[in-house]
Length: 269
Image (cartoon, rainbow, N blue to C red; front, side, top):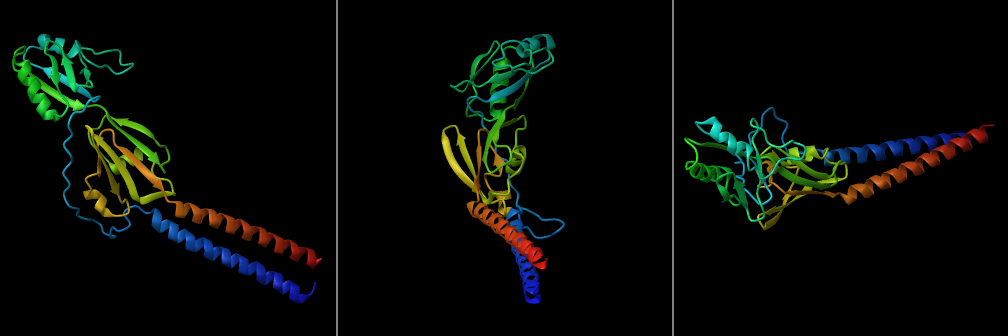
């Protein structure tokens, strides 16, 4: 084989290899920067952030409340904790003397409790509802005490996450980062600087945007998830197109490299 052809084949192969490496390294670095959450946070051992007060949740229709009633006479209070529960979790086997009954807030915003009847719950905080219930129970019990908590923080995660779905947690408060953790984290195609929170709170609807690349998310009013929130993670179509272009380029370069190698081997004979 002529020496000039030999050198030409080798040079072409080397050029293709170097070009491929440059393309992959450049795009890899660019994509990696975009994938980093909180990329504006300085590299420091400790970073102080402004105080953010957790939102005070109010009771809404369809909420499920766990209500534990106690008093100076256990035999009397037993009836309140075992009779008349408006809701029992499926498969729970009902309410026993040692468990706290769950109550479903009806569409009118009321809860019906044994011997008390229907009482208003929607629109009240847990503390307000508890105080109202204690006042009503004073007619039936001696020194009544009430513990109330939410049992159904329900939210939806859609879009560019690993497992989009509707999730429910017994926690009364979780952050946007924890909510995304439930969904298995973001995919590489997620638009991290524009995560939308669709909130419907007792008929008052609003949409908020959170930038996961900036530490300002910690002071956002949408940092803490509320019940029935919908988290929408949009696709970064530019990144998708870029990755598709890179894949096609890499495939073409691979084909050309293989073709040059075959030509070189044939001519060498």
